[in-house]
Image (cartoon, rainbow over all chains, first blue to last red; front, side, top):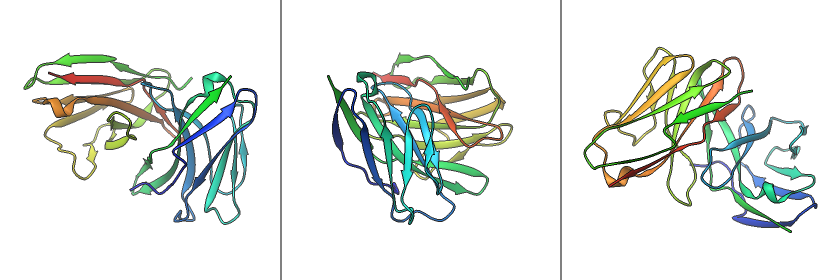
Length: 112
Length: 115
C-alpha cells in the first residue's frame, strides 16, 4: 500500500508557481521522499528527493516539514510542458533492495 | 546521462504466445533493475526487482513462471510474458538504478496488447 496521499488533481496558471502537497504521516525515520512525474504514456521522470532538509535543483524545490509528515514540491515557474501526473513516493528499504511504493499521484494541469 | 531504453515501444500479440521486452541502461551500469506494470488511469505497480547475476525478487501476487525476468548483464534486463492473455495487456515500464546511487531512471515503457 502507498504510504503517501496527494490531491487527485490541481490547476496552475502558466508562469506561476505550482505547489504540490503530499502527506506521508507514517514515514519512518530513514525513509526518503521522492518525487517523479509522468507525462501521458511515457515513463516517469525523476524530479527530486530528500530526507529531512529542503532540497532544490534545476527542476524544483522540495520542502519537508520538520516532523517529516508532509512535504511540498514547488515548480517555481510552471510551463505548459509541466502538465503531468506528479507522484510523491516513499522509498522503502527492503533488505538489499530499495523499492519505490507508488500512489495515485496528482494530475497537474498548467493552463495558458 | 542516465538514459534507459526499452524495446519494443509497443507490441501486439495473439493470446497464448510469448512476448519479450528488453530494458537497457545506455550510459551507466545498473546493478538493479525494476519492472513495473501500469493499467490505464492507475499508478505503477512494482512487479519484480532484479539484480544482475541473480534471480529476480517478485512482489506478492506476481506469477514468476508467467513473467520471466533475466538480468544477465549490467546493462540489460528482459521481461518475458509467457502464454499471454488479454488481461496481460498493459503498459510495462522498467527502471534501472545506477550502481552506487539511489535514484531510479525509467524507460519510456512498452505498450502490450494481447488479442
